[in-house]
Length: 95
Ligand code: SF4
Image (cartoon, rainbow, N blue to C red):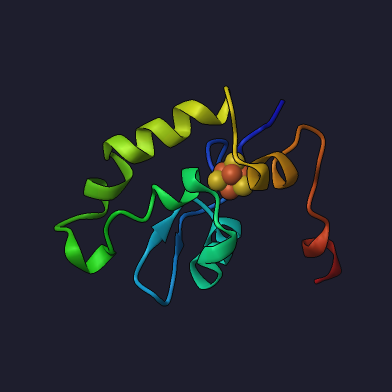
């Protein structure tokens, strides 16, 4: 189904200008466009980074654990698009 790049070391966390931490920069696209957001990705934005004592408090939260667990069962459309098995983003080859 999908090969999550956020779990195999190919993607780093994304820290948005709005103070949210997300699993990757593709998810970050929805911070600026909440009307298009997927509820599963929206659930990751329960706290801003400045509202917690550590990054672990966010990435080890119930919401993030649930998100990662469900990636292999029922992933958001964004993840199906960008992390489909066999899909490689070629933008880096240009630079
Ligand atoms: S699109 Fe989804 S599966 Fe892919 S790196 Fe981002 S959060 Fe992970």
